[in-house]
Amino acid sequence: MIPTNTKKRQRVPHHTCSTRYSSADSSQKLCRSTSATSFNDASGSDVTLLSTSFNDSSTADVILRLYVDINSPFSSDSALEDDVQIYVHSHILCRSKYFAALLSDRWQNAIPNNAVDSDNDKKVIFLNFGVSSNKPNSISDHLTVLQLLYTEDFSSVINTVSVALDLLPVALELLFEDCVKACVKFIEAVPWTEEEETRVIEIIPLLREEESKELLSRVSPTDNSCENMLHGLILAAIHNHPNMAFVKAFVAKLLRDFASRESARRVLEKAFEESLKVVKESLEEYSSPDFRGDHNETEAIQRLNLHTAMTNGRHLLWLVERMIELRVADSAVKEWSEQAVFTADLQRAFRDDAWRNIVPGLPAVVMRCTCKLATAVAAGTILAARQVRMKLVKDWLPVLIVCKDNVSPLLPSHKSLYLELEETFLRIISTLPMSDSQELLQQCLSFSTKNVEDCPHLFTAFNTWFRRATRPPQSED
Image (cartoon, rainbow, N blue to C red; front, side, top):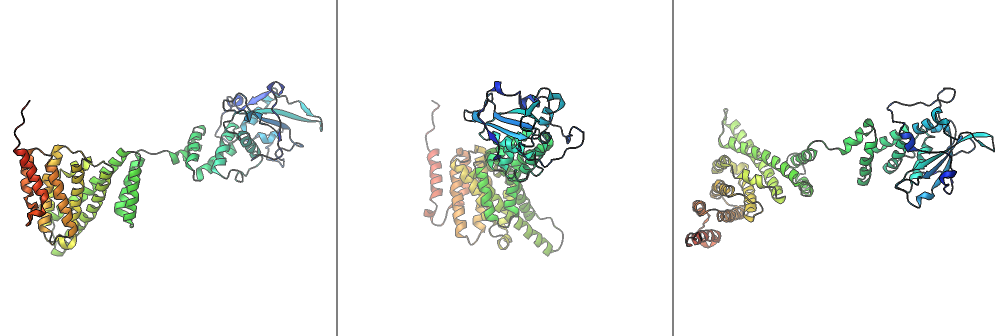
């Protein structure tokens, strides 16, 4: 905000100017204190803001010339022509600790303060103030801050983050504490654009600790804050939010776009282990109940176990899909291949008839998790070690067989799922040593159907094994 009645003159060479003072000269001798400062007039009484006006030549006792310092490394040729002269009042300037020191008795002898205004025979102090600038409107910002010396109400001027960020460095330079507080208070209380946030971060080191505390808390992460946030979002998406499908889609996009894949890996692995643990414990309690009480109570607890397994099984499937999508499912595959106890509990549960009327979709949910992971292994999306590949098929193949034999009638969607998993297991078996594949292929005979033409995948797997078995031994040469 530039006053309309300021005088703008052609820049005067240094040797014709009065003694030159810059903020750098006094800043070496002044420091910002945390205590409030009051300014006194010659009689020692407190000075308040009088009914004087900014740039009022009839009452001013200081003529202040602002110019762009030629020695500034940021000055441009166009900026060097800026040369503004304003009329101000010494008792008002003293609201700035910089000017208070400059106009104090210590510095009075160094100022050519005996100049006399020929019109009204009034003593006037002439000051030069060099402005170092890296932007064209630096003098305008200085003028605005100087004008704010004449008011206690900063809100009419400091009304945007951009304005506050423009004025704050000037207020710091002039040690104008009231203006500094007003700028910081406004910046802290309102939202920022990304560009404004960058400027805030750049200016924070110039502030005192108590001034920068709130700003720092807004931009400074705590330990593992990103991972804690992601984990909380995942838990909210799969457990708590009523509009679960849309929230899951939103969180999935956040995970895809997240900058650190390792952080996403750790968060997903943690959530995967938590959900898997709940499913395993629920199936273990269902398969091996240890209850005392009447029949109705036992049945209610069993129902609860099955529903808990079903709900967390769905969460587990969503997590597996996210891990495969981000290519961070290596640990999940290894974990899934080490579930001999869990798969035994599943086989016992699925041989029972009780689950059919309670959670008929449970087998499909569990086997979809297996199918997703196995397909990623067979496709090379996940490069699993031989032992992991073998155990994955060895432990989960019996569960697949039990599901096919005990889920009746077989739904079309279940039929296609089981067929896909059969083909995937056979492809993984083809990657194993012949002794391991021989043992596992014999367990796959249940993949055959009444119509042998309906199981070409099984024929292909056995033909591949026999072709390799009848191949002449390779010489060491």
